[in-house]
Image 1 (cartoon, rainbow, N blue to C red):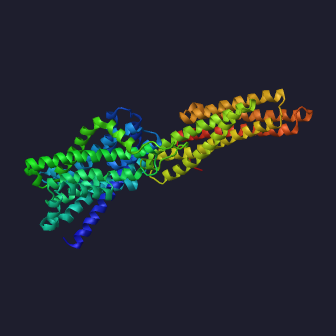
Image 2 (cartoon, rainbow, N blue to C red):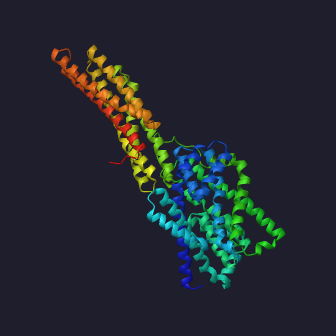
Image 3 (cartoon, rainbow, N blue to C red):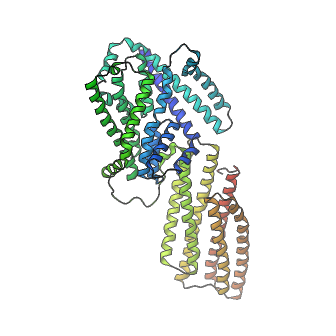
Amino acid sequence: MTIFDVLTLIGGLCLFLFGMNVMGDALERRAGGSLKKLLAKLTKNKIAGFLTGLGVTAVIQSSSVTTVMVVGFVNSGIMSLKQSIGVIMGANIGTTVTAWILSLGGISSDNLFVQLLKPTSFTPILAFVGTALLMFGKSSKKRDNGTILLGFATLMFGMDTMSAAVSGLVDVPAFKNLFIMFKNPILGVLAGAILTAIIQSSSASVGVLQALSATGQVSYGAAVPIIMGQNIGTCVTALLSSFGTNKNAKRVAIVHLSFNVIGTIIWLSIFSLLSAILEPAILDASASHLGIAVVHSLFNIACTVLLLPMSSLLEKLAIKLVPDTSKEDEFVELDEKLLVIPSVALERCNEIVCEMAEISVAALKNGLNILNKYDSSVAEKIRAAEEKADHYEDIIGTYLVKLCCHQISDSDSSEVSKLLKVIGDFERISDHSVNLLESAEELKEKDMQFTPDAVKELKGLCDAVSDILTLSFIAFKNNDLKSAGDVEPLEQVIDELKTKLRDEHIKRLKSGNCSIEAGFVWADIITNLERTADHCSNIAECVIDASENNINVH
């Protein structure tokens, strides 16, 4: 094997990993809506979680991405630790789909139909179609479809390049001795774990093993321990992703690691025992692409069959290894690990914005109530809500900007623009609640009171503002176009009420029925109420524009 063969091998590996990454990213984008539906159906039933993990991983072609996503879900509160265990086990089986696809590269026959099944026969066509869709497709879906085809063609070409590069190793004794050494179960597991930890993908490391099997020097006796080790190596990604997360997210990574380590120890012990006693001839036979895919699937299925009934024990083990410590942070945070699935990250953003909206609307309504009757406990709630709303605007805005750096669909882009707009309005509504509180505190401290007529007029305006707050909140939370359409007419009524109240206030000032100092407070209150209505109108307008795909960030 010359230096040029080594360079070709490295190039093939780079193409393989690049193609897998590009295809996986495009599959994630295309499957975003389906993933949200699958996750919405998740229950405490471990079988449902298992099937979800299997389905998601089979679609996005990466158990590492699925596990990292699950760590993010648990950290964000979308999923419980108990639910995550079944998903992780399903992901381990779902990832074996890649090996079966790659096994097509090992097909050999003179039959025309069988030859057409070989990737080298159809990947050029896929690459051509993918390139055409990517370059000339007008919609994001068509471009994603093109990226999927082009990514698949690239990884299969990389696989074929690797196989051709290592073909010269057939007659190299050192290479043969290397795989004889890996027949030692411990060394084989270590080799598989280290390779997978480096490239952070068990699917990719299985593909590398399949490419090496083209030399005929990889026996089943060496391949089985290596495949077992690959399952341990893939845990590195989840462990790294758990740094800086809450305790339950760390427990997910521990469950993933313990599941694979326990499964490997048990089945490796059984494999070693049977090998020593029976000495089956197949262990010395050369492993094929298809054979490696079969072993990979059987091992992952065997681990799941063994440990799925004991998922509660894995949960207890994780809780013991990562015990409860201090109280979790008061404020909700957005986990950047969810960005690997942009549509799911956007869904989480939407949930947090709904929480922010609820907090801001409740704060403003408390501000309306406190004008009528001052209460120190309500005052504390208003200030705490305003602080939370400020925090939410900061983290959501930053997160959405980061989300825009990923490739997202046109509909998701419209949703991002809508959220970026409304968070500013909800934050300003919370600011107005504090302004109303300060007005109430000034009235209390200076022992000022409005005239009975002013109180009656103010109550009418407050009722109208309370109604518009409710309408705009329902419109945003439920994407209710009818409620959104009712906001603007009410906002115009509030503008007219403000003008009328201002005129009446001027009359009271002229007649001496109202002091100038109380008049300043009165003016501040109706200004804050009118501006609150303006923000409600902005929110409703965003909902309507987003439904018509007529929204932009500016």
